Image (cartoon, rainbow, N blue to C red; front, side, top):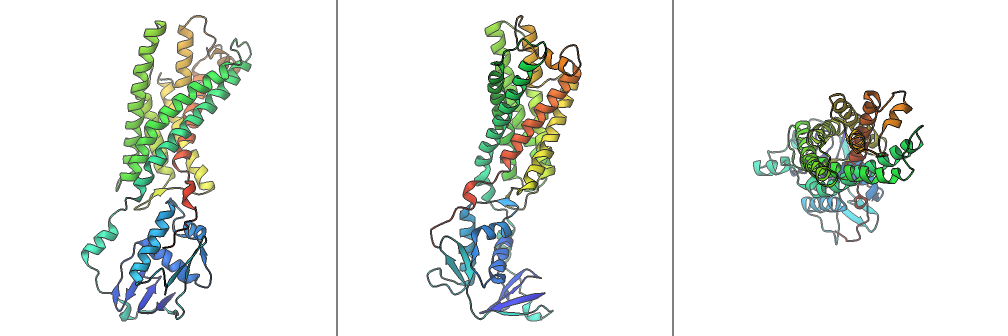
Length: 377
């Protein structure tokens, strides 16, 4: 291992220390990583995209996070952006370490590098969690709502097309957009409730992350589900005179808790940022959450608590003359009617598609993450 000496500073990658004249200079771990990256690649101007991939590759942050990191490092080194000794801003590109007399030397047990203890207040400030993730909670909530809505639209539309094409079905092709609208509304509401719980818990949780995510997602899903259940029962009773046991609250708790469990299993959060897996890991995380939600939907149906599709079938069966009955789907898979097998398959699919859309929205990376910042710092 090597260490770097420049001016009155010594940077030790092995010990993860920045020392100035024998005293440790505290740096947030990611700021240390940024300074080390710029030093290691000092012969070139490092692009902002490469910095984000190396330093913030597993989390989601805004462009301002990089600006703040460089500003803090400059203050730590006593640098001036207008006449830089150490870090130069390369307009619309990135940054470069420019100190000319940097020395590389082998790392050893030189006692001179051992820093004196940093003030307790500074150490506490470094260890304290950043509030940066909270700034993204609202964006993630909106993305989760949109993901749930898109998942509901897709599930409802495809289900309507299959229902219209099923042998012996009296449902017209127009049922596909109707079910897409219903699915989109249910998905958006469910995504809003569960997503609000997950986003707020992710931003606030300092410990016991998994339990916090499960509880918050179950709470958000349960509150929205209970509201939908009340409105649906009131609407059916008032408008068409049907008194049905329409679910919502319990289903929201179970699906929400499953989404929280899947999201906790599939993602990892650092001390101060929210997770944002990249490329294939993003879909892997979404599929794990989808599987958990699908299994939750299956369990609910097997215990007599159907999701949206089963509820639509119950309403259509109670309203004589309705063409929205899902009996043709049951016959399509070999049942005489819409029975336990078709109901289980439909519930698993509903839960899985919802979990997929919800989680993919939660872990998407925002477009402002890599936008060039024209303001020199």
